[in-house]
Amino acid sequence: MKGKVGWIEGGKFLAESGTGHALPMQAKILGDEVSTAPSPMEYVLLGTGGCSCVDVVHILKKGRHDVRDCHVLLNADRAAEDPKVFTRIHMHFVVTGKGLKQEAVGRAVELSAEKYCSASIMLAKTATITHDFEVKEAE
Picture 1 (tube, helix red, strand yellow):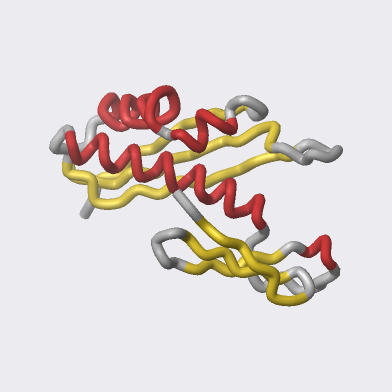
Picture 2 (cartoon, one colour):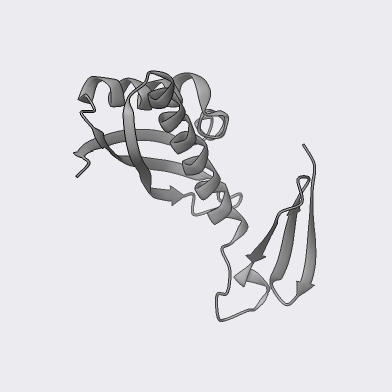
């Protein structure tokens, strides 16, 4: 895996993935008063949510469950002192589908947390990570 992050001006940066995708980043610590892009640490949190959400959908689809939507709401705390690592992350999954069973969704969330989500397993070295979920019936 490769990537590049370059400084544009002020607190603005552009991150480029090895696969050719670009994402703006902003570090308000460099003096920008108006936020125009997520911070690097916001991307870490969002990437972790994305990693886990992908796992949940993949596990459910692999089990032939009729999943129609999945999103995860993230809530995190960081240490007050440098390095300001994440100390707590809570993930609340909302999974929508036809006839989804609580047990299947719970198992998918558990498998992501314990076995598959590289990002959350890595962050669990410094943060307490908790999960819960709700299942909604698709219309």
